Length: 199
Image: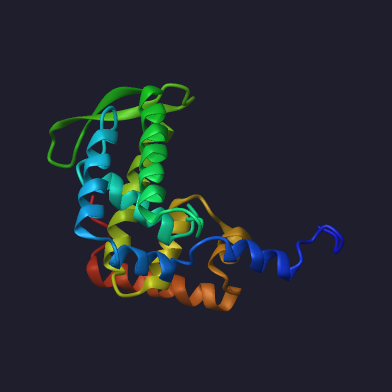
């Protein structure tokens, strides 16, 4: 990108000023009245139909996306309206994903048969199973890193498919800092599973 097409710092600040920062999202969340919370619960219950979200998880996903900057809440709209719209959008996307899936079966670790959704347009179902297991591994490691927010954010970015420079750029760290984060992640896994990853 040349200098002429690069956004000016003032333009970026102006754009950021139009949306709530993560700490402001937390403040708005804390200021929700019991009536607001009741309305959001009812909205969530209406949106769950046709998704695989359990009660409470659609609302939680909307909040997480706002806190992680995946969805931006404009300052000039109601926070309740923003969360309601976010839940509608997330549920809609999930329904579309589920509509593209066909189930296959595999044995879980206890030897029971389980249904695993596979995208209908996926070329290689085996590859999809490997990705599913990778997502499970990411979730386990994420829990191990509780208290180390930087390492948890790294796991989220890795699970999201970020690698190399794109990953470091997303985290805002240089190579040395990134290597240190990875070392902390490895240490946490080694402490929890000293004899290796359970199979």
